[in-house]
Picture 1 (cartoon, rainbow, N blue to C red):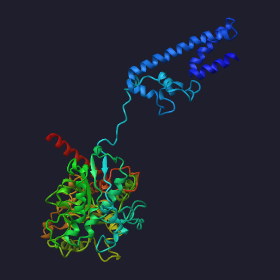
Picture 2 (picture 1 turned 60 degrees about the horizontal axis):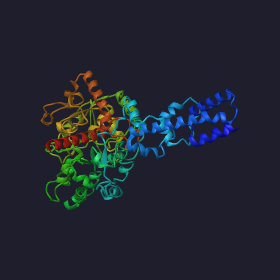
Picture 3 (picture 1 turned 45 degrees about the vertical axis):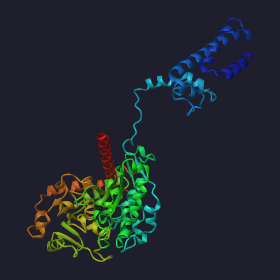
Picture 4 (picture 1 turned 180 degrees about the vertical axis):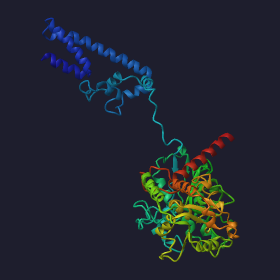
Length: 531
């Protein structure tokens, strides 16, 4: 009983390990074997054991201080951030009970190798890589007048119709059903072509590599809704059209993040064509705003639906389509659907006459398609009619049933219809290289003949070429290969659901952000070389 009480007292005073307790018990048993039987026979070996333990702890402490320096000393008197040190835990698994909860920091350090030694032992284990290295984006928290207030004023954003329903669901619009089998069950919305600013901003809020430290950022994103601002004042005075953009540039110029590179590491989205943002004179009769002619904005990279043919300093990105998938599986299912679609028409055209445009191909296209039994002509009529071009299901049904889809210029060189056609697996037919080839260089293949057809517009307008005959001469095996290439492009030209956190494929957003980061990196390298 005396021996047991003595051991408990020593254990509380010295906080012995299980091995030390076993060593002391062996000494006691030896004393009993020699006839000690009482307390006197126990005390002598126990004190020797304790002296040995103290000596071991002392030299372990000296060894630790030698390798750890003053930092190690400070660690000794802090509560460990973990309950049981990994090395200690590894030594005790399967070897009896865990160390007592009151194990002191000194005992922990005495039983664990010094940090420097541990580092040498773990040298074969690489440190985890920072998967966001070189990909961090700093996103400005702009005053609400530059973005959120525009959404709240959605009823006054466009002269001809209410934009509020189109801005629902983070800019995707209202959800669509399967439209009689035209669409797949998930991921389809009635998306307007001018809501990319909102879609992009919501998607960036969930970007995995956002940072609050501008010095870590590979690029800095300015979430200004330029397309919404431009649309609401398009028929007002030039002063009113330009006011908010001038306010933005002034706000940015006062920020230290801007002054670091004068805005050359900044980017924004302007979801309209360059024609809408490149007014040169302060004349009310001229179209558009002066956003892209502002010196501050010219330092930035602007993601835009169509760049200027004369100044391609910004990146053209795809128009938003109706499809906003969340996973690669949803994309693959849609690709399989359009791959197996029955295509009963050689070529098709969906559009309206543009009588206000001179030198347009549309009258000739209407004439040739209307006269051919192999062309599906979808002439846009009034809203709500069977030929309503704003009916997603009606338009996509035409494209899914055709091998080729004619893509003459729209109000400008490009058309949203090009990306709807790609989405349907319909091979685009262009009449001007500026309608795609010189625009979407980030998202489309460098070999245009692998996925599209170019018929020079003057050949058609001068009636030197029959569109039907030109397309009919393409061998069936070539048509199949071109269609397969078009289908392969689908994930790169759609914008994934911006609210989803399960996107697992590279979409148009990812391609654009990578290009911005690469441009800023090149600019920084150029600045460093110049210095």
